[in-house]
Length: 222
Image 1: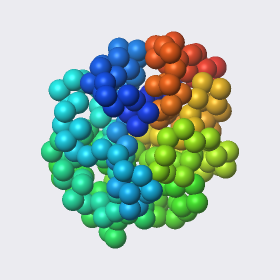
Image 2 (image 1 turned 90 degrees about the vertical axis):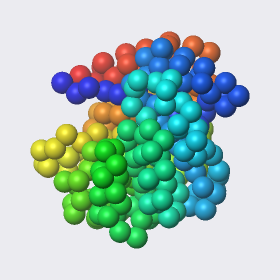
Image 3 (image 1 turned 90 degrees about the horizontal axis):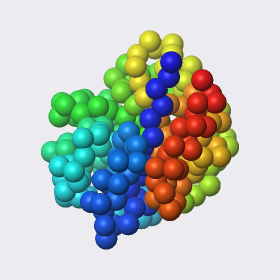
């Protein structure tokens, strides 16, 4: 039976109360903390760096999933690994040598993920799938929270699910962008098992109720 994981993105949290926000969302049932890193070069926004990751690391026992939307990426891999990241993922376009970057992540004892934007082809995946712990499909164009889910992402999720199953490896299939209670089941049916959700959780009045509602929708897929 598939284990579904909810990964709230702190991009939508109240940064004036970030420590409390992280504690609260974990108490509400989060499985993973998703940490969006943007550099205002690879994507048109600027968010947080390794110091913030280091600050929240002592507050959480769940994995910290660092999504690097930066270019170049390798120096940030080392910085976030030292800051306490458990999973580090990066975009195909952000590395000159994808295999080398994956090796770098693993050399720091972290799990490695590769990210595909809505229009990024999956062509490189067959060459590195044996080195991946996570594949992240973007269902919005990266750079800002609160965007609407792009339906064409479902086809890509289905394709990647088949590739993961054929590999025989345990690889998380994560989806990021516009995930809400009313579409999480459709995304799960396409093959995803890990769901990044920012505004749908952090903008809700009751984090626990929202996460519970998401899990109830996921139960309909089993």
